[in-house]
Image (cartoon, rainbow, N blue to C red; front, side, top):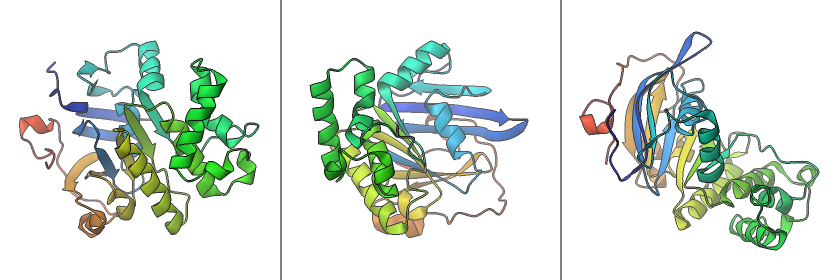
Length: 265
């Protein structure tokens, strides 16, 4: 077992996962550097969510390694991985799972209060993150009184309020209209960059991926491409999502080994 480079906050080597007897990931390797925003792209069913679950310790790969800050996640016990997710990682789903009985600010502050943070500083932190995400005026509303884009921003604020080392965002804007997608993603990426939060973002939308620093593409559970994204105009450079099969060889070594799955830098 070879430790990853020190400048990688996340490092995965040759991940193989089967779900219900069907291969979900086949030999996927990648690295994520501290403070960067990495988009994992590909059509629906290409393995994006499974990869994020492996990287975050929610799912153990059948084969392969996952490292966080040079510590092997794949050898951790379930309680240790759960503590890692709680203390160091944030997670955003396509549909925000807000507590309907709580106000928006209470939903945002909930992770802090569950950690024992007193009411006043928890509310202050929640208010600050809601202001950063342009939903400060919604603080006393309950989820049913918010529009979809506002609920998603509340979920983003809740994920960021603990200032995680890594934020995993699984299709965070999929249910939103195009204009709302752009606004929500820009507020998310701006907030993450300003606080040095590393983001691993799964998306099938090239315009969303264009807000990242780099993008890697999955197809049928294999990594097939890596694209450096210099700015919003780079959306045109990303491979268009497709459900058509494509030939791709297995990728079973990390970038440091100089194989076809090496990252562009």
